[in-house]
Amino acid sequence: QPPQSETLRTPIVAVLGHVDHGKTSLLDKVRGSAVSEGEAGAITQHIGATAVPLETVSSMAGSLVDPDDFDLPGLLFIDTPGHHSFSTLRSRGGALADIAILVVDVNDGFQPQTVEALDILKRTGTPFVVAANKVDTTPGWNPQDGSPIKPSYDGQSDRARQMLDTNLYEIIGQLSDEGLSADLYWRVQNFQKNIGVIPVSALTGEGIPDLLAVLMGLSQRYMKAEMAVDIAGPGAGTVLEVKEERGFGATLDVVLYDGTVREGDTIVVGGTNGPIITEIRALLQPQPLAEIRTEKRFERVDEVKAAAGVKIAAPDLDAAMAGAPVRVVRSRDTDEVIRDVQAELAEIEVNTEEEGVVVKADTLGSLEAMANALKEAEIPILRAEVGDVAPRDVAVAGTAREDEHKVILAFNVDILPNAEDELDHSEVKLFDDDVIYQLIEEYEEFVDERKR
Ligand code: GTP
Ligand code: MG
Image (cartoon, rainbow, N blue to C red; front, side, top):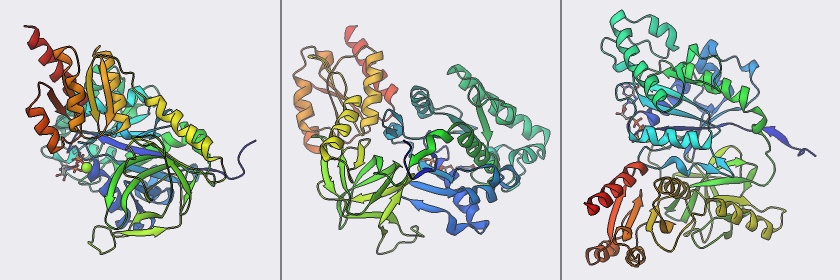
């Protein structure tokens, strides 16, 4: 029996890419364009996300998006800082994002985090488009603010067009090296088979109408069935970050992908020592115009519906893990929800052995990605945990039998000061990096060198 309140929820769009390739600028431009279209009020800033309703998408995309062709409510964009692991963006059985934008600087092309993002998109089967950003930096570029890319491209000098083409084909070639067939988006017939590359500029807004039109079209065409959820039902989401907030203690930044969450709801959250059961004290959203420094940065809301980003304040959240599931209990049996959360955590549990290396990562998703990469490299794991490197980790790594396993591989985490002291006085070696494959390469080089 289908749920009574089945509604189409907003598709979740992750914006990924290498550091400084323009992810945040792209979203800023989308917000800025909404302001100039007189739609400022329509865009809502969420915790870790920006919601753009269909009407606003349509007014920004002009003739490229006719709102009558769509029944999805709009798009929810999640910005992921390049130095952070967006592998946090996982959900029950797969990727949290329904669709993604892989942002690539047209001049720089593929960089380490581009490749890493691509690996995760491939592994999770997330559909995506490539935004070839910063086209305005092409020498001799004649900017046409906010224009769709085709007329803007046609309006360039032959020389500028050729330079841009060279860069675009470089990116298409790099995608092909990764085993993906890609082309400029207007030549793509089947977006499920071929990756569309959309030339854009976050500075001038050129190509943004195209980007929005393609995202909206892909969501409507291929994802509508998945968007049908019971929006009034108990909420389900993923922790993006665990943050201390003055006056609230440890809070959760959550992306809600199903149902509703209300103040007072009992929730179950994945924590380092098992599921945490607590009651929501407050649901928080950024104040409108959050850029302006205000005394109160947050606004309290009673209820949030999927899809949305929200900050949850509740007692006992210190041990909550980024990347972990959050579930609202509501009228269900608490034990059943706890079992659900445990089952989901078990999905991510890493196989450890009697002998191997110690792994620390910032989120459950990145821990999972590390474990996969280590398995491929045939490197055994003695212990794998989410969290900063602590003295205890040094002690555990020191118990490895083989010297080459007396190491800690730390991905995107801090080294606690007392752990540094501990490392100074032990044979344990620490490797840290914020790109998974580089981290593993560094370790492999160390092992090779020892063998020489
Ligand atoms: P991280 O969050 O650090 O990973 O970076 P990001 O991908 O969010 O990049 P961000 O938007 O912060 O942009 C990095 C720099 O590139 C900034 O100085 C932007 O002004 C600049 N930039 C971004 N997009 C464009 C563009 O389309 N054209 C030009 N000329 N500059 C751009
Ligand atoms: Mg950014």
